[in-house]
Amino acid sequence: MRRRTKIIAAISIAFVSLAACQSTPPTGEEMAAIDYGPRPENHERIVRDYLQTVLIEPDFAIIQFKTDPRPLYQKDTVFWRDRQYGWAVCVMIRDKDRRGAYEEPYPMVLYLRGGKVVAANGDGLERAAGVRYAHEQCGELGYEVP
Image (tube, rainbow, N blue to C red; front, side):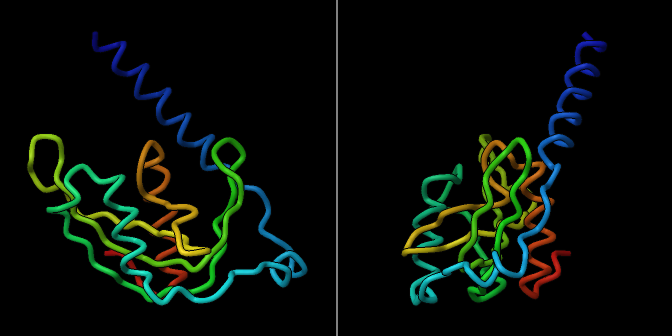
């Protein structure tokens, strides 16, 4: 049993490492061609509506908006996702776990475009790698995660 746990842990670490492999950043030409669209006026409502679908206890989650929307591109990864871009917002979230106890707060960066969330770092199945990306991207947006 102990050996199986070690094997599962090693596979998980390897998977997260592979998922974290990033491609090269966009060129200046690619950046100039990105159309972020208009700055969302109702970004808090868009984010809260999205979080209703991904949090365990959305009605009891503590959501703190740490930055206003700023244009940002989401780095793509070799195995995980395509590059996304949008008006990015850094939020700190404290959700409840399945037992009803509050988890430690964690960052999420959500990318908004066209009135909806088009990408998010720090949630779902990519939680381990996504939180790392969210830490980095919150810093790019002007908030240093403690």
